[in-house]
Length: 355
Image 1 (cartoon, rainbow, N blue to C red):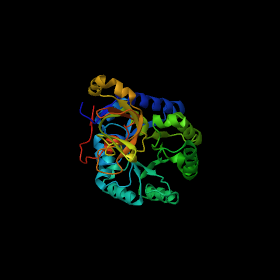
Image 2 (cartoon, rainbow, N blue to C red):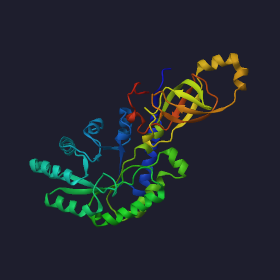
Image 3 (cartoon, one colour):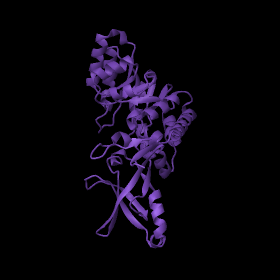
Image 4 (cartoon, rainbow, N blue to C red):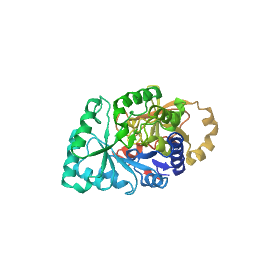
């Protein structure tokens, strides 16, 4: 088989969505909306599968608006929305979360030139004080004031806890943000808690479930009577993909053993913040050849291998593996559904295909 390639497990994606949805129903009854973080994975089959399950979408650009079904519930985030993106998002009835005063000015200008869109409502994003996203605590009051003066309806607030926060940190952030937005809770319809939720592999390591995060939201925001929006990405799709890769070279250098694979950080980037799991799958060719040298193989001792990629970069290292390896062996890499495909580089090699 020609490697590397991704395998998509639709049933895993559906199971993960149902688990997240069931948790939402437990704490919020019908007062919630799930919006898949489109940037996490833009495979059309992923988007189509989630649409059939009733999922909405979080988008960040005109490209993502076009990639997602037109009749789906959508929210739009991001610090760099263009006039064209804003006009099309308004036309398509997307819930836009305003990120800056500059963006608010653009929306006011669009509304003044198109008075028929006066009924469209918007959200604002409360950003962390040291991030490039959203408004600061001191700016929230001014945003509401300017919006009201210009007949811009603010009906939603977005909070984001960051990515993969520990539960204690997540809980503290929620409490801090409640203090800031509490005066506005009675006048908004939607409260968006963003994404950043750990995937199943990480939840297991933390001995947590998605219930633990949603339970905290419900307890802290118990007085909010509107719709709760969630933007899971990696939690839904991380373990719905595996990557098949082949060992193309075995080498030893300065007492360190290397197994060079046909994929590296071009598809298994550290920027995904994922924990990859490598499972050895011996090739059929090697199995046949090994019958003739069985005694030699059985005498081999296990080694710890540095798993390296094929790129001409010294940092093209993707993991460690302990056991017996030969050229021609295959690995199945788990937990690669979040960001790996979208962040894959086409440098020297093509992007892996999806099956």
